[in-house]
Length: 180
Image (cartoon, rainbow, N blue to C red; front, side, top):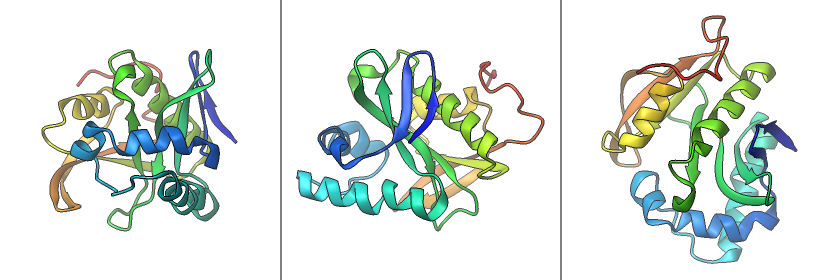
């Protein structure tokens, strides 16, 4: 299922056929450092993660992490979507791209697509964001998307910055960058 389509990207639900991409993403040094080491090192483990993670979340919550696919090449380059964590009352925005696609505006573009879809589908009136304090790129991206830092949260044994974004009438144009 397609969640959102932007000028350069298709954001769609993951499929088991995305396991090769996902295995690489889960084992990128940056993913392990800034997100979590899921200890998944083979395709079988990756398929299990997809089936019991994002794909189960679509059924359970109506949303989850999605594949970010380059339109021109039909190639998965990242993930972006909403995650429902037990530690948070509201869904949070999750994203990761393979390093060779950083600093080209893809993450921002994917996040805007996911947030616009979330607002349209009314998944929640509030979206959270969680990132490590030293992950300057993610902290900056969340602020650019209009998130405000509201505190800190211990997650997976690390202190994280906690952000929120209200999807009410105040945020009517998520396509325009918001100054930090």
